[in-house]
Image: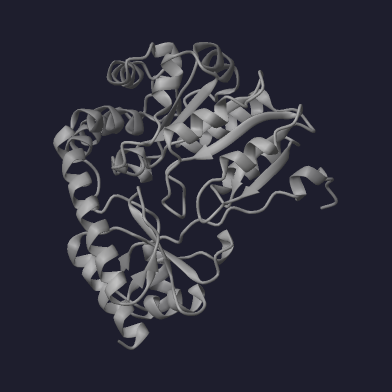
Length: 363
């Protein structure tokens, strides 16, 4: 069909997610593989969340509560915010979409680290805005360089901390020095998808700035630490006037019934979250020691994954590990062709990855 597509839409790069484990096994003819590619919770979902979903199944013929009343009030109580400062999303990436639709006009600029979550660029381009990528400095977000790229056309700045795929953290002092250089009228979006895993006390927290009335939006998700990636539920914390604007572009019923129910139950399951953090932190420590013993460089991480430099093409290591039933993420698309990213799994999954990597290395 001869349908005209605007050039700013044609310029959007396609987002390429990690493949489902079932698809990989079909393609490769393998079974019982281990997926350590998408930074998912190795323990699965919270048992309380599963039970709540089971109880809610009989009501799926009803529309969900579009206001997200129960979940938003639980989040507000936990974070010491007003309910009017929280917006639910179909994953936190939908909040990115809302920010772009509400605040960007053609020709506006959006500053972001390079590489980072691809949806920042995609949503900027979809709004006919101009993405302004700023390279990392020694695998860390370069806030000073990002500040140098601010112009009168800058409308939104995205900072993901911990950073994906490096696992590095922006410190509170670095962020506040950057915020001091932000012109009035610029919104700072802190993507904190992995904040629950942070062990370094020097890291910032968007909640501090939102409570202080700063023009900051914190992006959070139930996909990682809470194990609800398949239900697509996230949220943003922000000044009430920003939340009111986003409510004008938020699709009705965007957070589905089962997702809201599971997230509310998961918030109450503090024992599950504690166990998740213990398993992930122990796994990070084990993998870092094992990778060093194999003579490989892995970056320090404040997340539930590690970025590993390999002796050769990361894609080749990805394929060789895949042949051994271990799925990781090659990072050439992020600009790191000699690196892979591995998510922390259960102890037996971590050991299987190390053994498979040892075989690939011929050690």
